[in-house]
Length: 81
Image (cartoon, rainbow, N blue to C red; front, top):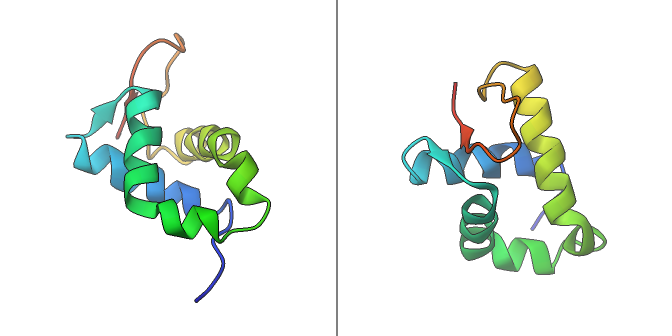
C-alpha cells in the first residue's frame, strides 16, 4: 500500500465536500476525512501529525485551481466551485 502524502488531501477534501453536499465547515471536513481515511493517516508517517494543517493547505490550493469557491471570511464554509 502506498503511503498517503499531503497531496492526497486535495482529493480527500474534495471527496469530503461532495459527501457533505458540496459545502461544509472545516471541522466537518476534518471529521469526514478522519472517518474515511483514518487508517491511511495512521500509516502516513509525519503526515499523521500535520494532516489538519495540510488539509487547509489543500483547500488553499483547490481555491487557486478554481475547484473551491474563494472566501474572504474564514468563518464561511468551504464550498465546491
